[in-house]
Length: 114
Length: 114
Image (cartoon, rainbow over the protein chains, first blue to last red):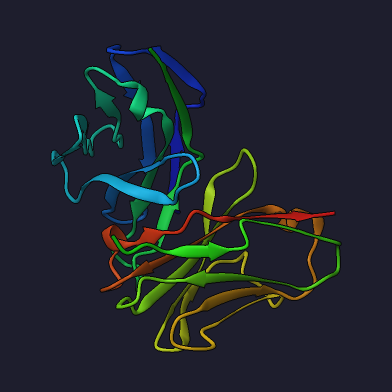
């Protein structure tokens, strides 16, 4: 079946530190991959996406590369800011789903200290 | 910027009671979804809805659950007889074209069943 496993949190970093949040997946078909972010009191927002192998999604300094050989989609940022403090969710969508059903991981809480 | 809204933000109910969770999707969106996250677990898909019909539902979405679009603006999730294990954060999402990367999420309703 389809499932996503992401790194357990919480993750605590100092400002300007390097961030990696690991995400691996299993899928029955050829999925699209996503990272969502949830800021306090808000809904999940799409951060970036990749739809095929070796694609790199990027947004707001965050990047993730779709690695089919390792079934991974790790999120990275070179220098985090306090404003990046949020919960990050890795997700996949099976192309066979009628309306783009998403499969999520558990979420990783990131706290960045000044 | 248009956003998905959900009410209430927190609902407390007794086991066996009926609850209705309400969502107002973005006004020009036609595709609607419910997801939930039990504390510490993954965000799970419940149901997708289009043209006044359920498009897809997960194994969680049993006869105790129903969805409705009672008017042109609301999208509701009803749990007929709540169980302790229904305690979770429930997220509503909407999409203009029914694509995975276009789902806009609300901030969630935390349901606590006592």
